[in-house]
Image: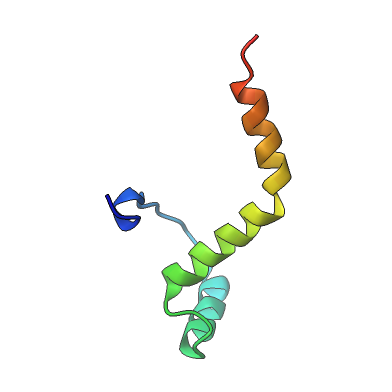
Length: 64
């Protein structure tokens, strides 16, 4: 199974200003498309909260 097959589609609603800014970055070549921008933004936020995620996973998997 490839990485693409392991993805799940989601739907998000964005304001026109935010979407316009994303489109400008795509047009300027910073990102290949909107999906690339959004995926990168999500990964960046997950990296910011990496330790919190680790602690939560450890807490949730702890069996007493």
